[in-house]
Image (tube, rainbow, N blue to C red; front, side, top):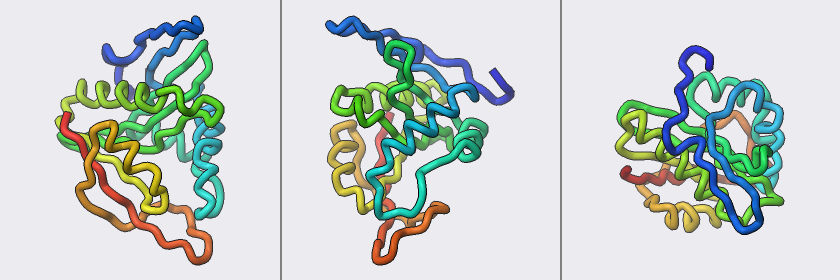
Length: 177
């Protein structure tokens, strides 16, 4: 692991077996994962047609690895879900939750989020925050099921541009650990 990297905690590297004999394992991403992470995130976020361009690129993902951690879920050796995790003082921040569109609806989002929450808990975080774009109205109910509650709003501050006519802000959702 490189400088500033954190060893996976006990939530990572868990193997989960299902009746279909597939194995789901969570772990921290490395630089070698960048091509798949970019592909996965851009595919999962392609639904955001109100924004110009793609969600991420190699440089953005590499910067995320430097600043925080990226937790991935692998099924039979293939990365199928990912989430960004960053310690910010006593709180954690989670973002960029992405599940391979072909794998959605299988509980992978919950599994990778739980692993990221455990990772941040292991770093001493006592609460977590996420930001949800207000135009993604389907997401707050999903995060509520994960135990998050709306705690406020913030301006959208991301280098992507909205398509003409789109207006958006961030819904801040939080959860105590």
